[in-house]
Length: 298
Image (cartoon, rainbow, N blue to C red; front, side, top):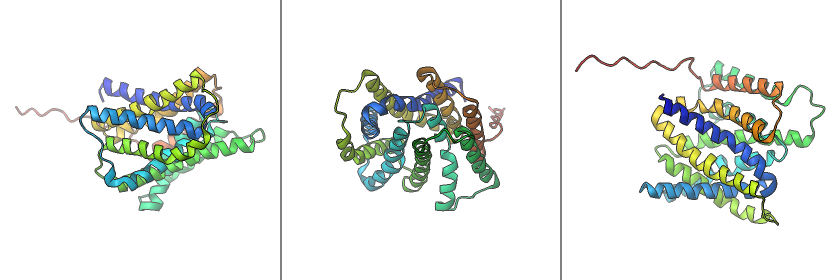
């Protein structure tokens, strides 16, 4: 990877980590459903404009049913679950719990497509459970049922991401990545629109909430997807997947910096154990392969 690629990888992680900050700010004001519906619709429109500027207008109707399923599984439902969870959860905790997505993906792939479940993956899942336990703390007496429900929603979102990821790998083989991103966002927006109509805020949202919405839609979603696909083309899926380890770090950083969220020993240790479990599940190599020396033939 060049310095430029590494810089883009960190920028992507910062943007995706920032999504938890944006949701923590905007969700209590706009409401989870309205926030997410506006997020995906704005992001979808921005991506459509980008595709048209590239003279690559999106082609979605040939798989419109599959896009509706993908929009529900990979955007509408998990986004709403996280936004609802963050009515009570800190942004940093939500970001770390979201890092369990690869663990759920391994389990879903094993059940759905009989993907090989190795000892490393099994140990990774066990470590992930330990990491979540450490994160929420050994002393549970101070936690309320609502806090437990919020944490369950965050983990549920990770499960839906896993199901959506496996579904897309089977239903959209060979699909243009930009079409996939546009179709997912617009489908999620269509699904949520009739529900959001019942939760429209009764008063004008604050400037902070509006800016958080725009940051979530344009930066974390539209720009985030474009950077993600750029890295996939440039450095491949394995190296791009290393963003998984950076997103919760930025989620904790932004929560501490902008919202003054406490960074406790449980939070740091739980995050470290969860990220180690993810490394086992996705089989991260200890070091990237060295480039072959250039041939001496002229």
